[in-house]
Amino acid sequence: METIYLKILYVVLITIVPIMLSGIIGILYKLYKAVVAIKLGTQAVLRDDLLGKYQHYVLEKNWAPDYEKRNFENLYNQYESLGQNGVMEEKYKEMMRLSELPPREGLHVS
Image (tube, rainbow, N blue to C red; front, side, top):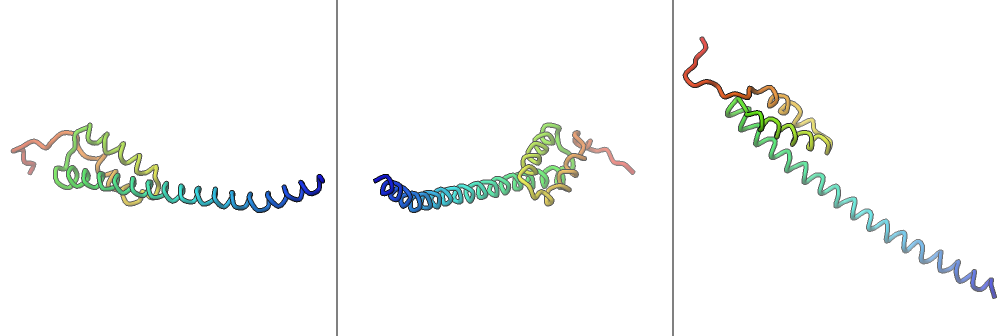
């Protein structure tokens, strides 16, 4: 009698466990894809914000207040932590080199 129960248990285990494992693997794969999508989306939003600030302060104004430079640095650090940051590294360095004071109006250096 025990052998019948063991055989039934064995059949149940070899049929149900693989089905459960495939379901768990499917769920984990979907979660992985979602995390990758969130990472890439976050990276794109951060890059867009960084490029906007770079264009405004580096290319247009050629100076940036301290609080904007700290904000840029914080955004860059978060962007960098997501990986593949080669695009923004040089722009970050340029932003950090900017003066924190606006150029004086009417002062021309010959």
